[in-house]
Length: 270
Ligand SMILES: [Zn+2]
Image (cartoon, rainbow, N blue to C red; front, top):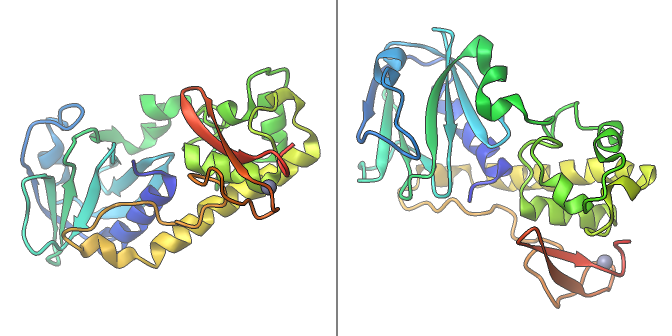
């Protein structure tokens, strides 16, 4: 499932061919993904100029000069193909730019989505309205986490996965960030010390930025017709490494929290 770093890298890849360009042609090849494509998608986008791209949580944003923003989610299997040699049956949305680039939104399992939102009303878009701060933005601070965790008995790991506290953090990144910040994933959130929270914020940013950097170096994959959208960083310290050594010399353990695997080291994470 594409996580925040994959979405960020996708947006950066799309920006290289879309930013400032005119949309010459739009084709929708089926009625729906997770939900129907907007009825006015083709009409609204055709002839528009892309003024910029962005990301909110795991959603990509394509802003246009008609004050309308196309919001896309890659779901489980979605990916954009840039200038594919030929279109395939899972290329459900195809955009052609004025200077001849072809962008295809490919989604075999169709858990993704495409919406059109008035650009000045993006904050009120239902999926965005309740989101916490972006993990790579200025809103994520130790003070923010301290306020969000105060008097909370839930495990710190579960609250970090709560999109209302931090937007867009997935399971892998939370496991890795907690390891780097030396925080036990089962610790009650309200009892995580201020120094630990001060370590956690840069740890979250580092694991995300390293993945984005790794993705940037494989940007070419977006043009590869058979390109798999996988996880960029394979050198996780704890994720998927049960029984292997943590960098501290301890042994990585696996537990289940909220129905999902947590990997951590009980030697360095207290
Ligand atoms: Zn360790």
